[in-house]
Length: 234
Image 1: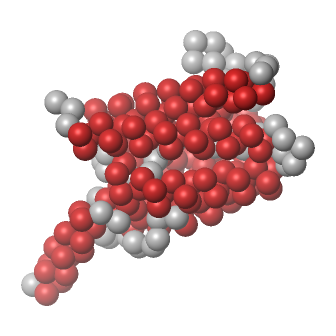
Image 2: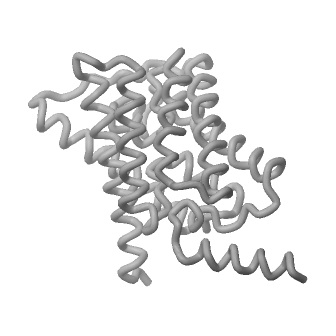
């Protein structure tokens, strides 16, 4: 049921989300933890990870990205569910590693549901998802997703912490799966991702196939391109 390739995809998503969360926490809670430096650090790690394991898993590292792609039928239901589970586990594991490093636990920072925070997270995530889809569909170098993520974080940070990633928010203790605090950090990114991916698919491309393959630069990209070329000749 789970071959080496599928296990590698899950490990890539687990490690990628964990690394992203760890970098986010390290920069945010440092002496230079202002939104621009947080965005820069997060963007750089996403860009590096997209190069390192993008051809393995598609470089989601974000439950909202996975769900957004699932709504556009670019990821199958079982694969999406598996990705989300390992992404959340990666964020939580990063919390454990960070607290071990600083020898202290982190206090919850979620609070009650706030529409302003949710909207900020939704807008930041919309920018990221829209650009993610464009990078994938136009076959741009996958590492540009790092710049897209940095831009989304900067915009969202105007009114929120700027996670635009439920798994990172979980690792930073901004929300609790079993509680009610901080769900704006979940609802906002999900809304933004769904709108961003679907808007791009509907209005800006007629060749929006195999998005995860395109952003990873795998063999499926060349196959899809070949099929498109043959159809144009006909």
